[in-house]
Image 1 (spheres, rainbow, N blue to C red):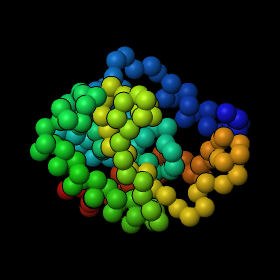
Image 2 (image 1 turned 45 degrees about the vertical axis):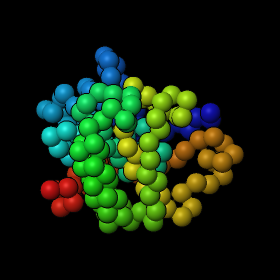
Image 3 (image 1 turned 120 degrees about the vertical axis):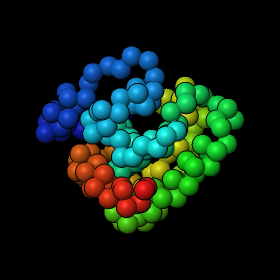
Length: 165
């Protein structure tokens, strides 16, 4: 993987470099007092919606159950149905606020399927735009983001109650 040097990101990288013990998603589920620091957009009784700290594209959010499992089939069907309903609302949020022209929606179940955090299931909502991949992604094996994580978080957080309440 090629590396693009962006010294202006030093503050962001160094402020989020603390290692989390155990499951990263359980850590988020159990630290309600750190929602802004952790990128949480919304919480329900059984799940939360969070910005992906290592996004595929800007505005990439995830819906994650509080229940720790690596098997979708072990999740209570009622929680899954409500997560699915909130996926619809999240798609509308991404289209309206970030003007996404498309959305990738899905789950990678298990390490061999590409899950970065395989021990705790999570549903991805990835906003897409025409031309959002280019030569640097295809040939250079690198991604370039046009905007700052915190700016996107603030825009989505500011409007999230309109969509999720």
